[in-house]
Length: 402
Ligand SMILES: [Ca+2]
Image (tube, rainbow, N blue to C red; front, side, top):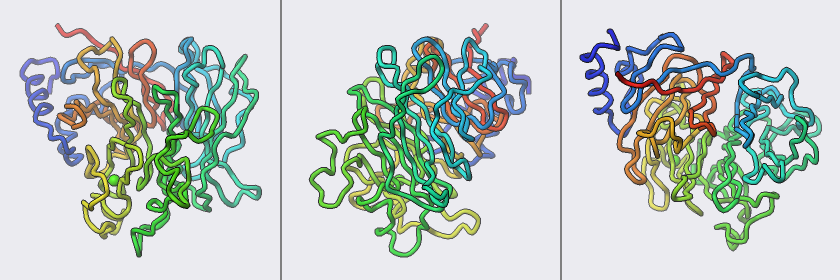
């Protein structure tokens, strides 16, 4: 249909407005955005509240996984294979940053997230998460280093966290990071794909003596804050903030409440958005909404249990959720406070309109351009996406409505 015709726009808008808080099947979601499927990247895309173009900022990256802006506007991008790259003034610098730790780049592992310290401008610290190999390379876990970034190279590289979840497996490393407004560092950790069979309550994601399936909270030097929730629980690892997660792939701190929001991959069906609070249990694998990949067989004991938290939103089927941005910029004023998540297998950007801590509306955008692995709001207020297969960084730029 002609997306410029008022009738078509009304139809799209009506469908978007009718979107239920629980996302609908892929086919139905695709139908609402059929006008933009396969569109040229610079074509005008319609959305509730704002129209926009998807403009390529830079290309030539290989499997970008994480990205963050520095105060001077430089964009740091990790390539999963192990390189840290700089995009400066829209140009990808040809030489990767020197001094990055060795990573185990296999399966889902490699060099993963990158964030600057909140006071980067004065201390030059950045943080890198990655899958760390053991001495003989047979096992790996998630680790985080802090380093100084000066003259486009790393110095003073210091490991500040190593997760107690070594495995020969190559998946579910978690590894998204964020600083809250008090300066605490949150790191998401996955369950390392430990099978969810047998006694579900004994799965390591439910076990406070390991880091599988946890979100941890640290001081900026890696030490444990004095008010973490499990400090007085015998045997519990002191870094733990929340538990019962599967594969947490997005984190954002709410700009006004300082609440910790995360999103995680469910099994087949059941990607989740969670309001991630101190000491709480998010249920994996005891409760959830998914089934086993392929076989479609049951995993969970049910969808609810006393003492376990419900997700704020679920995606059935899963979109392969990744990244999380809570928008505060001035380029899309009507999207202020909206949540944005990426979809990898679902190849999309999802905009969530919130009503307090609840999801009021779901809109799918930027469909069919490949796996959206990471997203950020730039200091310029644009929304940036890292597209995994094409190695591009694109941004949404508003287009005035006539
Ligand atoms: Ca859950």
